[in-house]
Image 1 (cartoon, rainbow, N blue to C red):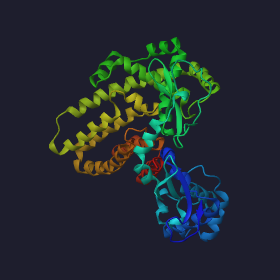
Image 2: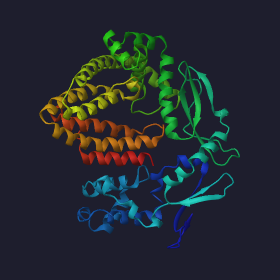
Image 3: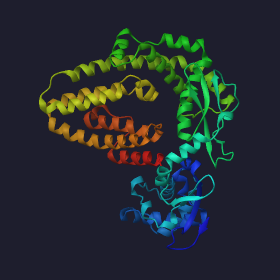
Length: 442
């Protein structure tokens, strides 16, 4: 609904959200408001930019109109889409942290009206995250109370259930409630379960799909698992950090299946898509799993050498840096690290360990310089950890996962620049990625 009443708390566009769907509401989508107000919002966002940027996009009104014509439909956060439009029109790149949406007047921010199962207004405001936090418990209770059994099933060992919808309507007199079907990994089978957020469903489905591919491959997968090139020595190293060689083989196989059958293509939701990827998996899985097995074997040997290096006695002035490297090593290699590390990223771990050895050599020559550099890393690592704590057990977004490994590359850049990094990394790029990670959590 729309109300023109400057100064009133409901001035502008209002959107009514039932408590049951509040957790699924994506903040960025509401940034686009309605077409009639988008032009004003674009103009004021451009005016909020630093003077040094505004100077290059004059006249603002003309630029705003060109952006409005070019910006297209809501497919990403408004400021990101606006930055893309400015680049296409003027060839000017605007940093993500240059925008100041918080300076916009209230009527250019969506007004959210939260209603309960009976349609009664229980809250209103323009801060969606605050409203989500306020009603998290009630939304979960409403979801738990809602029957889901007709959409769920267990004991699945092959794709024999038709298509897997992205969303189902669970309302049925319990207020507006949406559910998100997913495949859950049960070890010797998978189940179709319904979750309260698309993020949770996507995370569970990724694990469930991997298991379903393994079960469908049967003896072929078992043969590949048995053939993995994991040495006895690596098994002993992995055992020393709490893992078992059998679990390691399972993790390598499932990671390779994920890489070949899911990768960046997204989750299969139809029988046709699943069977197409199944055929791809049969032909490509052996090499992907063998290559990963070889690399893991190498990683564990590198880990053992690095751990031994870090256990050596050092002067007091070097101890803080050594403890930092021990912590870093423990975040790279630990029991279950293959399950938590993207396939391609495992192949980068040896370079991170080499960078650690180079840092150790420089540390002996200049402990003070190392301390300064360590402080630069700590700033970003602490920001990353602050975001992971806010997840409260929820799955990491792709943007947050990217930030984690960008920080690792930043370590290489700071302590062992000669090794190089696959992509340029800097404080500015880290800040931009941090903004994206925050946005993905909104």
